[in-house]
Image 1 (cartoon, rainbow, N blue to C red):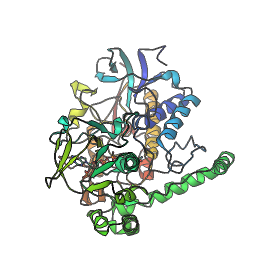
Image 2 (tube, protein in one colour):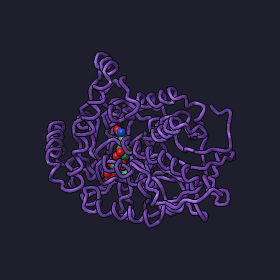
Image 3 (cartoon, rainbow, N blue to C red):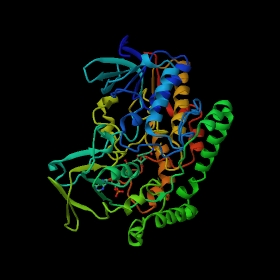
Image 4 (tube, rainbow, N blue to C red):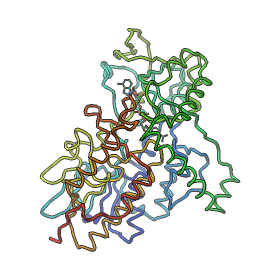
Length: 493
Ligand code: NAP
């Protein structure tokens, strides 16, 4: 894959996850051959390559968690496991003959806009440099692990593992294990850890709303049916998408509309947790949807097991062989698992993307990321980011957002061709208006006003820089055509 390098690219894509692979397919289909995808990992898949903790699977039904132009009749479960999703992306790369255009094991450490040349200069970790007219950061919003700032963490003598950096050979059999966090990663992981560990301490800072996960196997007959009748799978996909869209009003306008989900979560918790006091302690005190609603049918039953303890209070410090909770109780452990999530409001590392006048995108985004339509950023010409600020969803499949952005990217490139421009930059006024609109819509939403803290909000400014406050269809409509009036174009030099 790494042979036949060219240093002069039309489009450079950073990241070979869903959005990077999607961008590569789009460009290939549009006859744009001079592009390259760079990824620091040894395989394609992005988050689905990196996250290898046991139990990792999608929490959006797979018929919807796939590209609309590439349905997969072979999903074996309603919620596909990580391995299948990664294989799906690998198959797409093969089908679209993209292997030679993806440079794996290549970490881009700096992308620098050169105003004189109107080109992006990309340097990889080995010092090799290439130039590109267009830069497409497809970094993913949840790719930088969040290590908690707990006193003593660095001094723990046993194994410390973040869910995103799971060593494949990690054996927890007969060990005393602590898991910090009870979010989406934790509830998938914990049932597996409970089966191995001799003692499992779960440190929960805030309970989550959890509803049953309606997962089931998709048998060979059903799969054959989807292969023979593709429209049937499309119909199922449409149904899942439409039902998911109906959740928007409850999240955006009135949480009272989520009463059904709340009742379901309450019933699920009481039914699955034996100890009524624990069941009560596990009830969140904020609106449903404020944090991501979790789907889990095998998490609560773990809490009934004798070797498992839920510690529903803070951590005061970590010692070389133990965790001390805020009540001063010390629990000895051999291994520590951090299911503490990601730096969602700081998705771009410092020094990675440098725009006009040496502006560092990460520094510009210190108070929270901000873009136009989640895709373009003033001060960063010829840059089209995928899954940028305010494109995450709490109610539907993010693949819908990626596809809207891909269409927008395609239209933008056509527009540049038509105008023979080699520099395009979103106007600061358009970006400001877009963000004012987002802020207005988010103000009363469950994500901002639901009474919780979450990765959706910047930890200091509390600005919501992650969520798209609306229907996926609304986003799609807003990106359906390339709105050249929001941009300044120049060129050729
Ligand atoms: P998360 O939802 O941010 O959960 C992190 C957990 O760690 C929370 O329980 C948090 O408590 C706790 N925590 C963080 N810092 C802590 C500290 N200093 N002390 C004690 N506890 C601390 O992260 P995640 O579970 O990795 O999930 C993040 C997102 O990734 C999800 O919302 C979802 O969008 C995505 N995801 C998807 C899937 C899937 O199935 N497709 C699977 C995993 C993740 P607080 O709640 O109190 O902050």
